[in-house]
Length: 201
Image 1: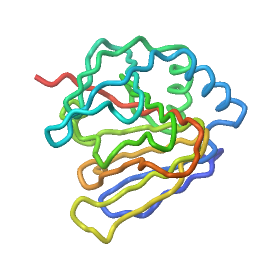
Image 2: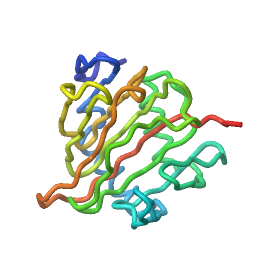
Image 3: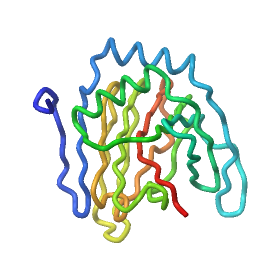
């Protein structure tokens, strides 16, 4: 069914990325944005960077099909149940991606001051070559990529309302990504990142 969607596939070394700008129709994306904004149990966890602890510069919520926690940057989150909208979005992702996800991490960027710094989704519990499916709702924000070893390899593009970004293969081994702060006046944005969380012993 992927032929129904426009797709941007940047040719990057050591990465497999697919971006679908029109993954959700505007009216559908509008509806999901409003419902998730109002019904998700958003939280603001402290995060420790270089020995200093700050409020995380965005709101988050973890939801899963299992009760397995997920941790990053010293934060360990316990999942809430999957809701009807989250299940519907996940089902639609499966028309383009065969991964069986267990968990979705939601981020709420309230203003341009909210951000997500340079990182890779490479926690051990995500496995060897994790598939990350990222759905954007609300205000358009720029997504930055940079290669971990080759400083000449960088990419930046806007994530549209209702879009889907798939990062697969060795992407998380070789690339970092971020959503940077912006001085522009921007409306809120919700980002849903679906992933498979494995039990690590």
